[in-house]
Image (cartoon, rainbow, N blue to C red):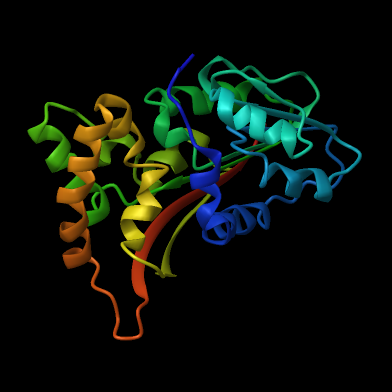
Length: 248
């Protein structure tokens, strides 16, 4: 299980932006009366609460590999437990599985998807969403600077193409992608956005001063790649990939 530290407060700083893909994914899940609903990689539990509200009669199962996120989820009233996503196996009554912005952190997820779908009962729904912006400047600039310091980060191959997931999930799969144009505000908003995600492995690899130096070098590069409008806002394109499939 990963011992990497996550910061729920920083992650939730852009709660509205992070919630929209989850809501769009959930809108395509047609289950009416599931017995058990699972949130794989529940984070601080703010999105899990939407599952509980939609299916109040279902057993709610939530897990995350981060102790900090599990603690935050429990504080939000979610009965979360600490467990790595790749170690999870479905209970026989699992009728809905949702995993939101998680599988990009699991290198073996493309091996796990068909295995999970096969283990689910017939009619169960599996729904996933992953970022698809690893080739964007927000990530390539981080990777290049990290490489100069001997740190290797995930490349664009960490997440597949839509066709890859359609093939893995089979004929029932509904696969699509969306690019959200998110208007961010404040000082260095793109840097602030990626602090809780793309920059997390860099922060783990460097001592505090080295990490501060890293951010100081990265910030002007991000400002150049994502210039602010005269009004002060910054448009940040964020591509997301979605898939929903039904177990046979």
